[in-house]
Amino acid sequence: MHIFVAVAFILIIGSLGSALYFMMTDKGKTKRMVWSLAMRVGLSISLFLFILFAHWMGWIQSTGIPLGR
Image (cartoon, rainbow, N blue to C red; front, side, top):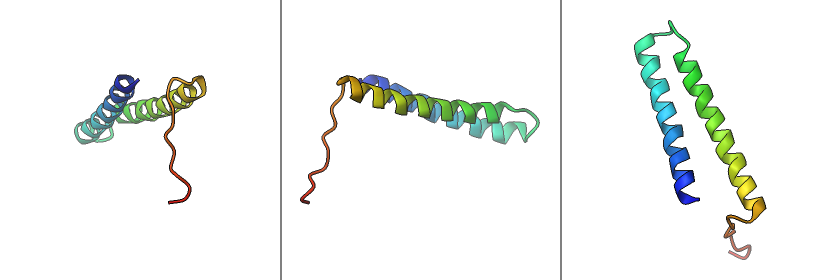
């Protein structure tokens, strides 16, 4: 599970980096930056939903914060 989340974060950061690269090189002539940012949003939402699903299935456990502190 830890490896999957780490790989997902690396893909999200890579997509953000590619959007920055396309923004600097294309100068608004193509839509590659928009597609890279859309992919980043899609990956982020997918990761969030997968973490919720994994918690619901019992694959991961939340530690929580003690209420009295």
